[in-house]
Image (cartoon, rainbow, N blue to C red; front, top):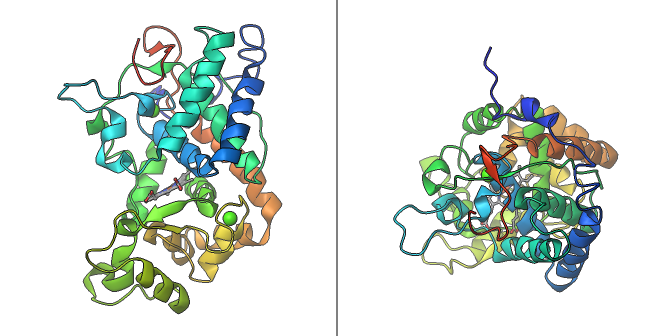
Length: 319
Ligand code: HEM
Ligand SMILES: [Ca+2]
Ligand SMILES: [Ca+2]
């Protein structure tokens, strides 16, 4: 039988809520003091860190590989410098760096960066109004971080739904998990380049995507010209509540207010449409499903022990 450690199902049982109960009992408070402070000072730390966790888990598993900096002068770029990761905000990396520094001062050498990232992502979801759930821990940090491993493991805004489903399936995640986890786009922002083709030239038609509300289309065109616009401009994923972690994302999709093609397609494809409708009606159902799906995503490709893992002191550098 194929005992593949690289998907969510096989790794989940290796993790536990009380993993650091003896070695670092105050871990969650320590991380929590940093995330609540950061959330006040820079609320974008929330979406930044949640996306960081997603990008970590999908490449080499949830092992902190996304946090590694490219060695100065090295030819091989680390993951974070891959094209697909260029929009990850510094606020996410800074949150983990600060939390790690505090944790190291109280519990030196015992807590992995991967676990700190999982806890911080949960904290920010809760701080933004989303569900609170227990985080299972026991991930070790990975020894591999290569930009070349990114392209086929991360979905893009213009990927087809079949490509996206395939990537999720390869991680042990289902179509339902895809719909539920995409609800993270209830907070945060995207740069014009990820949706500009929908506004002017959808799939080579020279016409906008018919599945965009005309008022949203007008507003987005104003912010994002077809050519030569300011590349720093961003638009909110959720036009109604961009900083609140709620279930508005799904109702927006029904109202043609999705931002990326990969968002709007969830209401267009018959395999995902009915779940979008259910979640749009029922916040409690979304919150519960989201917590479960995050635990599942958080157990992709988990490493244990010194053969495949390490416990870094500085999350940006291998031991
Ligand atoms: C289903 C496939 C997905 C695609 C194609 C996708 C794509 C994107 C893109 C293009 C951006 C904008 C980046 C930028 O321009 O700065 C983004 C942002 C974001 N994504 Fe996703 N994403 C997907 C799934 C997920 C999942 C599963 C999560 C977490 C569970 C997530 C969380 C976020 C968050 C929170 C942001 C906002 C980041 C910020 O404002 O700094 N995404 N995503
Ligand atoms: Ca990783
Ligand atoms: Ca929202």
